[in-house]
Length: 431
Image (cartoon, rainbow, N blue to C red):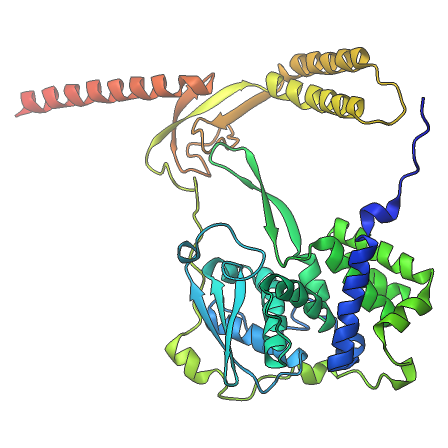
């Protein structure tokens, strides 16, 4: 068997060398044109009340306050901010990583006012809004200082670099790519993915690692940053620090930053988070008061209130058999396709999966399972429940399989019709 090549960690955890040179070069260009203070001394902003003490009510003015606070961190206290919130349907399509259609995007600079636009859904999640606003503030900062490039694609890449340069790198790196799941009407989990920016998590993590190394942060401070990031970004960040620890002088020279004794004093966080002057938001709040976000679709909650549903009573045999057998079969198939150098006996794996499935069938027969018959609900019910706690349906009886639901509903309707006819005859006789 041919000898396998050793696994190259840097290939998977770091941008390629050309990208590394470009990223460091762009940070160096910002240091050259705007100084080293933001790169080395600005607070590394986190999305919590320590860094954003202003009230959040989920409306347009809340988003303006958020942007204003970020511009204070960017030394743009003289800038004013206006935000127009658009319904998601007006923006159209999925959330874009950058530009029009993103959670929040820069529109234009008009005098001393930076104009922004945002999706209404952005206001439902302050953490998401903070990351999107951090990137938007970086784009506004570039326009304010005349750094905007005519090439739109290049400019959006430089906006991501600038956000890290200004101290917003933890916010934007954490939100670069997020994976999640949402439950559909059929009770299945549908995977979701959100993106912010265009550079991607590996490049942003690399930039954040460059900043952490250039600042000479202690191991404790580095771990603090790493804990704020998702596992992938944390791995990229840690590997970047390991890379530059091997050749520390090279990075410092390429960035063009002065010796530490010439850095100057870091700004006081208490000064940066001081309340805004009285009257800054008064007029806007009279015209556009803060309002709670549009309520999200409650889905199946309460959908069957006053309607009959049934208790599906059966054993957990099939469910438990799948739960035990499928993971073994899937892992066996995956291992068989991977070139691990270890022989995989698929026959043995198949027998193990079948054995576990049989065990699940046997044990599951002794475990009762009661659920709501509504296909969109399926909530677990106890024998004492008379109303489904999720969909609100009135439990009209028991059935042994979800497929019996329609027949049971028809039978219930026939019984109700017969009862109504009898009641009518009795009422006629009494008259």
